[in-house]
Length: 402
Image 1 (tube, one colour):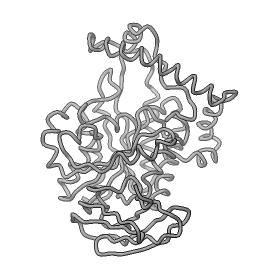
Image 2 (cartoon, rainbow, N blue to C red):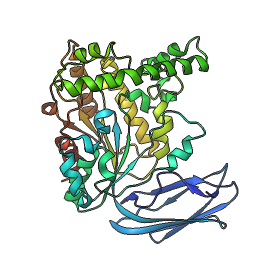
Image 3 (cartoon, one colour):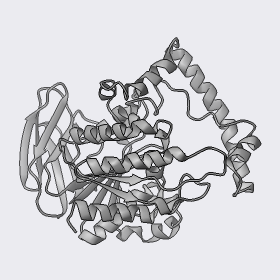
Image 4 (cartoon, one colour):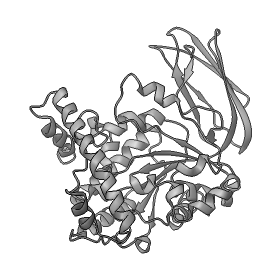
């Protein structure tokens, strides 16, 4: 690999948002002049501190395929098969993450998805930055729809994109940026969390967990957790293979112990405050996009009174990172959920209230109500078609005026 590189999200088959400035960025040797050409425009900039960024004017018509070329006078890069269409970022936790191959209609959908008009980019799931981070990040890229490629796509993101592509008659790009089990606090800059006495508590939880511990102590705890998980999880899987309707309490009894999830909180944990903001969200901002779809809240039910403030902070944070204070943001309101255990889920009602209040008091937001889409005993309802399509209805109404 040469010195001239683009950020990992810029690859063949990418989709560029119509009607918004096109921001391209990457790395090279300091002092080199980077010249880029795209869609009839040419622009250049100087690489400073090994970083460069170029902004093209908006492309105001849908179409493609186009090429993006970059050169520093020594090296040249070409990115091909670029479409100008509609781009949405799919954020949240496991219900946004749930893969198309595991969705109840996924088997049939995968056979016909090549005609969906959807392309997909998955932000690499890296909980911490080390010497392998940038190598792993490059082992990805935009994907065309196919029976094989689309297996691991977000089902919600896919159904949203498919309906939008059909209604608008354009190519839709979905950027997945999500991680199961995460709090909204994982996706907000730590510097912003500590500025508020309430949200600072999420950072304090991390500090308390690491109090008196060395990094080596933390790694020892993490290794011990992984060893436990490697023995415990297969027993859980075995129980449900024999007892599909069994309860979670029964499964844990069969496995010999209660779940110890989540993993120990520490420098490598995806669940530390601000962690995934640094290792995932910042890796894709400010890629040109129309808006955000967001399905999350389950993991914040232990602090429901904080969620409205936290969610509004997240929306503001992401809009700031994309340099658009009114960027559309469409929420999924949590569905009904009654589990096969004795845990009280009343806090989910408070999370739903916080989600609705956020929508009603925050400009340029929408909310997909899916109260009727829950499943008894399953925190991950497997029918994601109504979720994706109701998100799309909100986008058509609030964003596209249809």
